[in-house]
Length: 257
Image 1 (cartoon, rainbow, N blue to C red):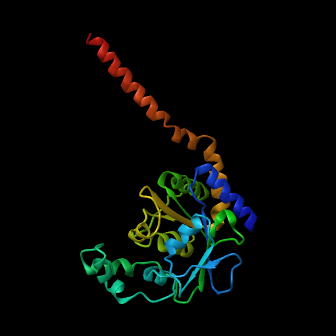
Image 2 (image 1 turned 120 degrees about the vertical axis):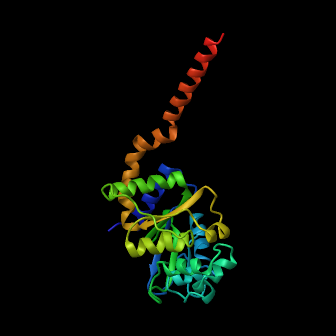
Image 3 (image 1 turned 180 degrees about the horizontal axis):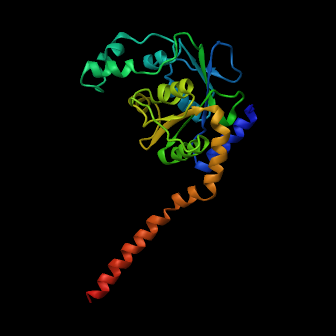
């Protein structure tokens, strides 16, 4: 069983190898509402905002009474989905869908926890972990997250990774609930809500995976960092192509003199 100290070390090493701009995030889905040392209850926060704060170093918690996003509240089994979202009218009001039936189906297919299954969410920077998380969430530029997916594929013996998303609830459903329920890595392209409510960049997205995979993922990131990662980031093939094109143009120019 990995310890919190080891979790911290894996997190720091992942950040170093990939050049992450913030900390990977640990999430514990707690069945009871016991106090958590060092954590502050985040009042009227969306889940994506709790993740944003943890990415930047804060240790926060949210529960049924403090989680302000109604869709995330249903995803975590805190509160029933409000009728406007259930019927699809809400997504029409946001300008996301043009038909109620589309919005309704999007929520019907949403992965959710059973009502009352958990009592609170403990969200913290992984490099300061004092407990072992259930899920690791990472937000950053797509290229950096790509290497995590590749490392996870190695852990799974080369099995292709399937992504599931509705371009809604990218942090709560796509990156936390699905990895928790299906015990696998999942990724998407972000969503309307988190892009409106947090500082996630236009070129950034979010992935999540069960914490049990963290040691093996970081171990393979170490392997990738020996050759594949610096080679790809060095864009040597692009440099060779540019030189080839430049040489051809120079030859044509000399031939025309």
